[in-house]
Image 1 (cartoon, rainbow, N blue to C red):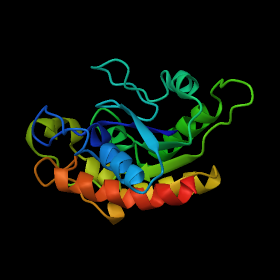
Image 2: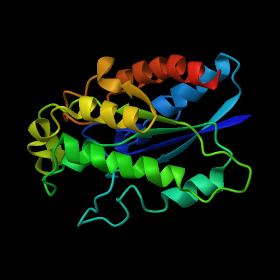
Image 3: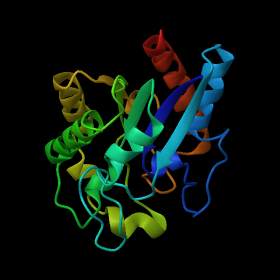
Length: 212
């Protein structure tokens, strides 16, 4: 059995828009990915490390532990050997308390990549390849989360291109989730259940080619 780590935030955790509830494993995209890969006889386990509010490198002044670099190297070490690490971060870099643009978020992503590659894995074990999945562009934030994401649509413009450039410069694989899914019209930030299904199955094809 091969193991894949999904490292992300609430878009991968499966937060149901306008609620504090979570989609089941079979409904959220990492679960769809595992089911799809196993149905294609890849024999994999998808390990989720997805924390609501996680940034790339910034702290949340109201909730501890949301800096994506915290404990990441040890997480890689503890799960080694890994066949792939899938990183889907970025949306929370544009919360209202951060004055970031797409370029700054992409530099945070570069730190995440380097942190993974500097993990102190056991001798003879390989650092896994990395697949960067850039989240879809946010819509107008609505509902209870709106105050946290005011202005995110403007600040995140150009994120896909910025992430693609960093992925290429660091020899990482890349997939633009915005090419197949959109953020929920209910809160403008998260993914509805049907979008999790679409993204998961799209990534089955992407990841299958990488595992081969």
